[in-house]
Length: 122
Image (tube, rainbow, N blue to C red; front, top):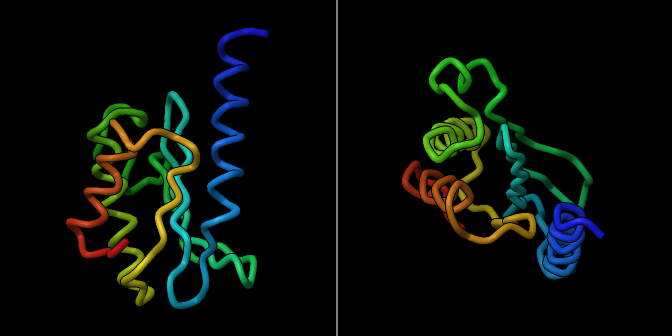
């Protein structure tokens, strides 16, 4: 088995293990993060209703116009600011952070810190 496939399977196993413990509801929705090599994606989800409340990525026009590359740390900071702004417009102040099986390091950590700095509580 190739190393890339093994890493992907390991991340998927970690993600499913964490998802058994983390759920989002209307009071405290789940903030899900997905990271690719080129871009970052984040969603705020109400798991009880099965609906995505807010989604944002580095491919959105607002974020993309401010960054050069979508997969680096500066892009994660801009994504965090934009997502927190959209969440506050919808009246969301508290979320449950789902790091998606990724290490809390690098772009995932910067995204979380930018969200906290902009006013979201985990």
